[in-house]
Image 1 (cartoon, rainbow, N blue to C red):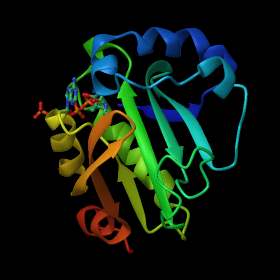
Image 2: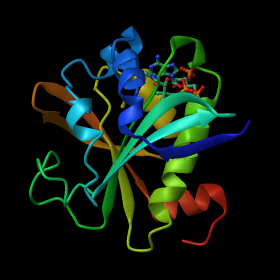
Image 3: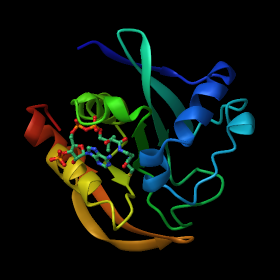
Image 4: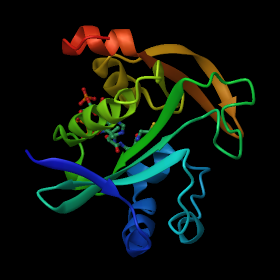
Length: 172
Ligand SMILES: CC(C)(COP(=O)(O)OP(=O)(O)OC[C@H]1O[C@@H](n2cnc3c(N)ncnc32)[C@H](O)[C@@H]1OP(=O)(O)O)[C@@H](O)C(=O)NCCC(=O)NCCS
């Protein structure tokens, strides 16, 4: 299964808007407005917007941010400066539950930890999204506490470099 991540570009606008309307994507983030027409046109150094492709076919989206430098301070102004935070979804319902998300996350995690200064990765699934909790926990993320972001009650999960190295046989 050849999955690769590439930067999202303004040419992905229609695709991302289409995915945004899929019920499983809405259910995971009902209050999010990604303002794609603006965001696809800018490239701040604290963020990567990525499209996952399976044998060249776009299948999903990943955002990686440095939460300490992200400009809305979504994670709070006192967040540590050695972290990354990830958002992920599969675009089409037919592609759910086939192992694609797991491979996408592995690639995203490896991308984050390839920067030696990154100590851990954060994820903020809705408290109600228990299937996503299971997905992240299988990858080694640990729940660290409930937290409200705007109107969303979330269960924050964290994956340390050490935990990832231990489960994947890498040196920390
Ligand atoms: C979460 C997600 C990226 C996982 O990718 P995937 O390719 O479906 O997952 P895999 O096939 O690798 O692994 C299967 C696991 O994914 C999770 N999963 C599958 N469908 C899901 C869905 N609609 N919503 C949430 N999690 C789901 C479950 O944990 C599932 O294991 P289970 O069958 O034991 O419940 C994908 O399901 C998705 O995009 N879900 C909707 C959006 C979402 O919840 N994103 C996360 C927000 S924080």
